[in-house]
Length: 259
Image (cartoon, rainbow, N blue to C red; front, top):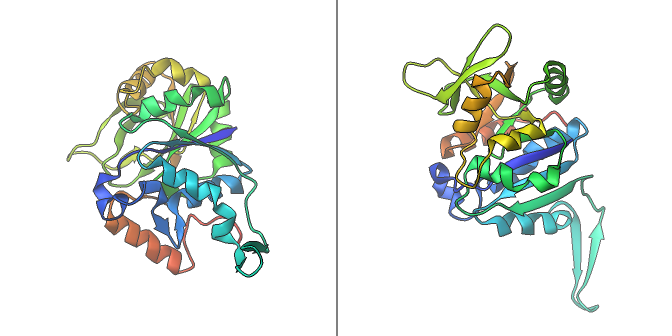
């Protein structure tokens, strides 16, 4: 299965850095948060990615193009025809497709635009601004067992995300925006989608978290996989600083891979 990552928004709530680069390219421990998300999937053997880019999409493309330069020691030999020598080349087993899904396209529209790259197969889908230690193997097994169209990972945290009403059978019966009276069980991303999801996505104006999710919920096609471990989004500078501190401590909960 491929992993699709939404990475095209403007990131206006963290404009201190997003005016220079897309939010998924903002660094935690000298690596973009996008890299952290991908490394988490790779731990579970998922190495093929589709990046739904938009705002400053060239930054993402250029970073992948020069990936081995970012991660390896390099000798620039100017006396010998500007020869470049790469020492101990370090790279990944990744196959990455970066798709320009448009500057103003909404989340559902971005997913619709990459349909030809996933074709008729189930796929993972998540946001390019949140890290977690969610068990992807258990998530996948849960999704395959219930057979519904979409499984999303629900987390208990006070964030401005889509709020979920969940029954005792893990059916999501309502999907709506958070208000001041709510508890804190929210949409944490890390979804698994069957290809039928594309039937719920109309065009670039489609917001995944609104009509599609609500319709899926009303039809009994949206399931919750509750994750009670670590999850943190990076909407603001304060949240970025929190992730930086965790990474610097050497005990980042989402770092499940070995160096």
